[in-house]
Length: 308
Ligand code: ADE
Image (cartoon, rainbow, N blue to C red; front, side, top):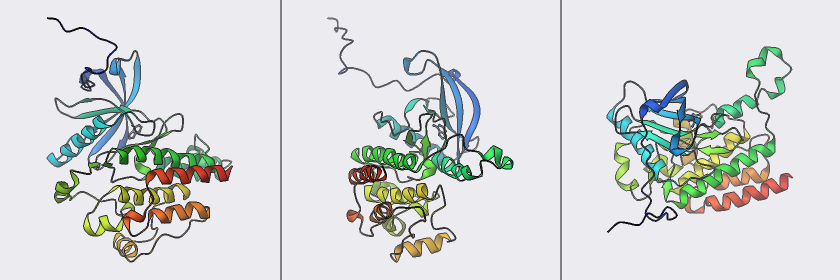
């Protein structure tokens, strides 16, 4: 007996075949470099069965890497494979994971990471100064744009937390901006399933993003959506200060001490009182007292309406 071919039904669709032939990738330019990974801009023809050449971003390990680093990149791929497409999360387009080196092929965000975008905005006021020509931002952002960015990121995080996933490294450097100025959460190398968290923490000798971490994570390695909310509060601070480094002038030890004794960063100069209140609510010492990403999204929407 033959099985009826039923192209209209999604019920029996195999998993998306992410694997793609390595020869299809034409590497153009290195656009990012982390402690062990690199990101390249590349071209690929006919990815995901789509027609024509597309620009993509490819993440891969550097020439020398440890088994731990490979495991981390593989984990990032696995997490991305479980995510449904979401407008505020960088989407996976494919991978080369059967043979070495492991490559993750993802959507290309033409405006790069938000930390760099924010920092370039600082030179806006120097636009008439020709000596700063190369530092001129290609995009000019308004205060409203910045609030919209925070709304994008809160939407993406709302989806991540709804899937019982923890990002664990939410920061402006890990948010990308596409050509249409839509923020996309990226870098799922530290992301974990809530269930798997219990077993995982032992091998944690990686560099930690201390300045974005909640007191319970610093002190007891406890992570939850509430600790992602804490990081979101620090992200808000980064946005409103145009990409400053949190806790300026303090050493890592001073930051840990400062946060654990209940001190918080002061209200930045150009920050409204309502945004600062939201930030400090994200930094509530007692994790369950922090707002959820849904509440954060609502409050940012109100804030945007107030700004007019
Ligand atoms: N840097 C890191 N990932 C990137 C991406 N997907 N697009 C553009 N720049 C990136």
